[in-house]
Amino acid sequence: MVGGVDAPLGTYLAWAESEAAASRPARRPESLDALIAEGSEAAPPWVGEAARIVILTSGTTGTPKGAQRAEPRSLMPFGGLFGKVPYRSGEVMECCAPMFHALGFAQAMLGIALGHTLVLRRRFDPQATLESIASNRVTTLIVVPVMLQKMVDLGPESRAGLDLESLRIVFVAGSQLGADLCTRVTEAFGPVVYNLYGSTEVAYATIATPGELAVEPGCVGSVVPGTVVRILDDDGHEVPTGVTGRIFVANAFQFSGYTGGGGKEVVDGLMSSGDVGHFDARGLLFIDGRDDDMIVSGGENLFPGEVEQLLAGHPQIVEVAAVGVPDEKFGMRLHAFVVRREATLTEDDVRDYVRENLARYKTPREVTFLDELPRNPTGKVLKRQLLKEAT
Image: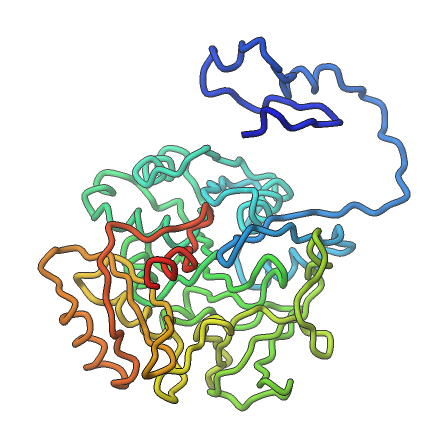
């Protein structure tokens, strides 16, 4: 794919799948090991421009964008995490999340700062990860929800004979965890789940601790110390507790704009996360959906995320995604895509389950069964592909 690209600073081989690939004579790049060996041990020259970090967005709504942020000038970004998660120095961290996105990169850098041993693999394997927790005495596991799902779907037999007592922290982010999966993971590993809500642009907003998840497994927790989270209406006014609105966040580690130009909406110094949600009376945040996912069907406002959360708890459903599609009569209608455990589950079964548990207008008018949902490398469902199939 990149064979014809002119790289003015040269190209370097990070790894090779085989010895044959490493020894190809045509346009063979220099290895990183050789570059290190040739490097000077002298102090680097002083530069006038402050360092910036560029992290790719997930690209769920299009091509991934480069999100740039300045190098932190204080320990506040780490301090916020320490205020919610019981990290310790000199332990063992297994980072399963890809490090070209915010979750894996930030946690790996934190692990290095804490003097952790980092356990890394190029590809995620759920059984290998379970065995690694036992053999490497892993204390902190960094994952996205779909990875946890694959681990618990292996069943108790996959964990038989494995000593997983070292595991103190399962740090999960990247997409919605959901109450059902949270409960299953807690049953498998104990009260060790820490569920972060944030984005590449706003960094972190809230973290749900095991204590908070024991009370409300579907929440994303309370606000991280040093962070401000407000729920605003379309006019920029704060809404009352329990009312759904747009989520805005302020902290010391927000991004400074996309590399291609543009940024996120800002109101009174708070940046839009792109999601809608609400706080309950205990200060726990719940995500109700994306602010651009809401559909109006027959005059009723509908968030697909609510239907997804319900169906995810159905015993015969592995995973589900719902999208809104145009409808001549109702304006929009809901289309659900379901991965089922058993072929006996029918479209009517899915619709009846929603109808029995939610308002009638939230029932999907169409249900499509898939072998798996399309996902990007961070585990987020690619709804744009589902929209193409639905329309």
